Length: 412
Image (spheres, rainbow, N blue to C red):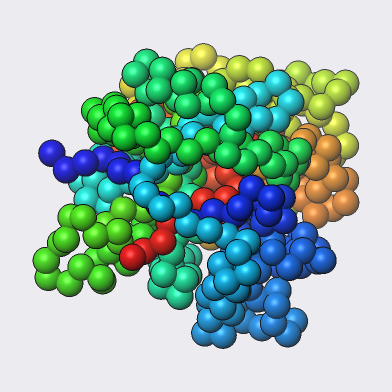
């Protein structure tokens, strides 16, 4: 059996530069946000992941000069000694802490062959244009800079090695966006590397949680570089990932806003909802506390919607998702939106922004109605991936998020 993962020689910031380098993932900030976050921070990794901020305003972010600028900025950080590369392959314990939540995973490189064989399992469709952007980014940098967030079923052997690795002082520890502390320990002792590699390669599968476009792009780069014959040991046959045990990952809700009521007045929508839901008006914002329950903000008021038990599906991992239940009973039949990937009437709001964000959309007139959902569970994600099925768009919002810039996989 081909290996699932292997250690790698990370390109990373020297510890004293980590706070100057750390950046949020390239795809969670707008151009304006990236520009503001990088202001006065010449070593910010946003100059590599979003290099259009260093070019004239209005520059096409997919222009050749943007990718070239990113490569030049990366080379400059290496030349200045801000980034250095570890001398030998290793794994890296990667811990995220925010408030009372803590999760500890392993940074590694995952096998493209395992990805192609569905041992690195996915649950989302990708867009070719977004894939191509990441392909061009990888090729320009000759490196993979944004780790794919993965999950694995909690394993005692893996946890034992990680606990030992994290017993000492971290290689670096730095605060990133949203007051998340990122701590990294290098695991490079030969016995520990071998033991962790054996434990990880014995796992049935890794599950992509966030980073489907990065992993798909890495597979495209590998296919282009290998030509007619695969070199199983080549660096391009592996991609950068961090995997966490499923019992430590946290998924927040991914809420919905809709700009129109499909020709209905608010009261008419409530009357039609009564056919499938029990409806209760609430005096405060409704954060669902169980599956098949939804908060709805409409015409300045909150309602709790609970799907009637007789309508609950069984033995279908996709249909059982709350995002699917809302689509089947509200978004499609009542609001007339059949393709949530392309219909401009629907928008998505990550749960980290809070229920007040939903109120603001509706109260401002930018939306006609908003829905708060119960979060998708990690075991539901795994069940969908195990069934080789696809989740609806915007089903999961993982928080906290990995940072860009702390670990980079160089393609030798």
